[in-house]
Amino acid sequence: MGLRQGEVPGPSPEDIDHARGVLHVRHQIQAIRGRLYFALPKGKKTRTVDMPSSVAEELKRHVEAFPPVEVELPRGKPEGQGRKSSLLLATRLGNAVAVNTWNTYTWKPAPAEADIIPPRAERANPWQGAAAPKDGFHVLRHTYASIMLEAGEPVVTSARWFGHSSPAITLGYYAHFMPEAGSKGRTAIDGLLGERGDRQAGRNSPDSPQAR
Image 1 (spheres, rainbow, N blue to C red):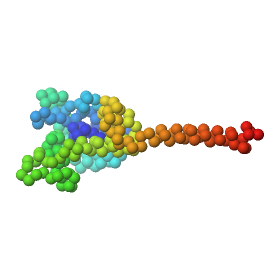
Image 2 (image 1 turned 90 degrees about the vertical axis):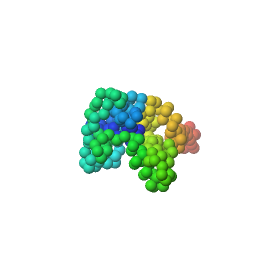
Image 3 (image 1 turned 135 degrees about the horizontal axis):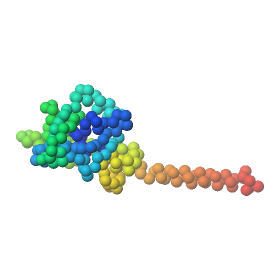
Image 4 (image 1 turned 45 degrees about the vertical axis):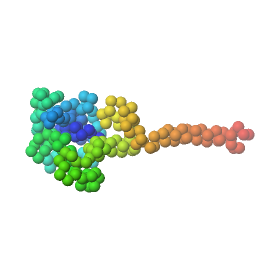
């Protein structure tokens, strides 16, 4: 659904609206010096994103296999007041997912195992996996954005789903993912002029009243 990585471990069951087919992005999980806390999404703006039916079904299966876990974390900052929230994603120990730890021990080893990125150098520490920024988890968000725009989803709608402050930001990042941009406009004009041309030709044809 194009979430930022910090937003992925944040949703609660009440954030999912199966009837409308949407997910409410109301907070994310951040860390400062290893201390996790609940924070508002980037720009301090909550939003609602489209939830494809395939994702909704996968979430249902996940909840059945791994029931939500109630977690208490500070709110707003590591020193903030504790807040309890039922999370869809948690560790095996029932804690909130720490993004940096997940990146180190789950994300980086996975593409390395699949030969997408180089494996970690021998004797290197786990956090020294050879994942370039373009190979990081954020690439999933870019993939989602490119698929949406290439499918013809309006930029204004996409910007709202991505959590961008304006469609101009979306265009700045992803305009190159819109190879058909302009073709709809050309088709519309061609259709208009072609139709008008057909009408004009009809009036001036040998069978038209003006020709008699």
